Amino acid sequence: MQPEISFSFGILRQPGVWGKILRPPASGIFDVDLISDDHLEVKGGTTTVRPPHLYNDLLLIFGVKGYQKAGILSSCFVLMKVKEGSQVDFQFPNIMVRFGGKDVELLTTGEGDLEAIYPAAKENGYLDIDRVRQTLRNEGKDRGQQLK
Image (cartoon, rainbow, N blue to C red; front, side, top):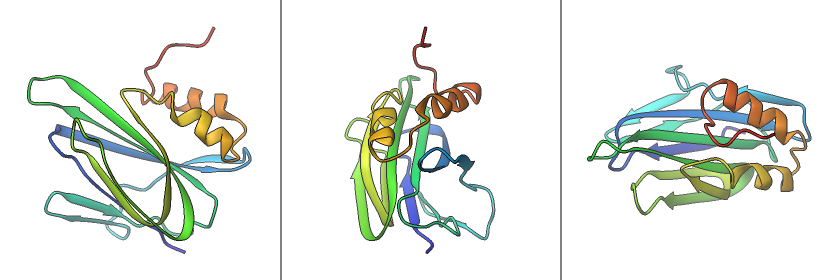
């Protein structure tokens, strides 16, 4: 199966996007290839990625960040589950970033931080959330409060 995830950056300027694949229960964290022309298509203001070799119940985390007109740095995040036959279309109301997809189900969203994403990933079978959190912090994608 080859799910399709599309996103547009709404009002954000100088946007950046990243994606991770989580394989429950705690077997791996992988990057989504957002560079290869084989799996990436850009048309107008919409970018579509079709990661190969995905199967049902894998979890996908995508993050987008960019600047609003006033120079305010904003970010948003989605957690999706690969599910054949599902479709998603969601737009963040304040920054107009839009996520869509085929063969994926939207589980939760977060604006500003990833705190809503972690418990939802755990509820959907990924047990080692601390590893995900630490990986994203090490990569500079999660700038939330440090656990003590």
